[in-house]
Image: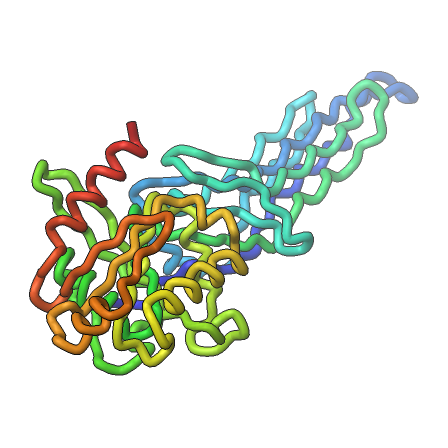
Length: 325
């Protein structure tokens, strides 16, 4: 799968106002009639969420965007034409941020949401009526950060090598790279699960996190920003993990990382999934530890054989339906 581009910086420039006209009509040897019209307003630049746009990739190749400037005014009180506005389509779920102040201009969540990011300059004043002709104002310009949160319903989060890729592939046929070594997943991976009633659930696997991830180790934790739009989270645990001495410790590590990055993630519906139950050693460890999370449902599965997955996905489907109702 191609790399997901979730943040880009672009430069946008609104059109400048057209120049005001300095025009005179001689009436007598010493008397003139001033007839210069005002210039047209410069075009503004706006961002609009468009469901037909599914990636920020195009912004890697085009970084500068400019609206049309206004046309100069003419004689005989003729007003210059306004410059055309420029509308830039972005994927729904894109936050538009003013880089200079790190200020959120607007979060374009739904298809059709839009916002003006820079205003066109006012047209210049013409000399009609005895006024002094002036040039138009310059259009505003700004560096804009586009930050896209992945449009998934359910996110798979877990310690490295907990079987997230294998589960995503079994559920969605996403063909995500799998490996028996940690940090196989380098970026978020997407897939679509088809429910029994022909509805679709969008799933996203995030790279593995562990105790040192908040300090920038491994893949870090910046990608956790995508959880801001999550409707549900599946916490995957490996009974034989090299990154935790027990299921309880692995569970606590993941919850602590959520709390550190954004405590509101703990309010998202969550289920705990213990994977690799096809391995005898893993099954023995689960029976020995008798791990039971206090606040969330627990599912024992094997992404390899499919054991327990039907019950898990029935719960996921029902939870999403209740949340949507």
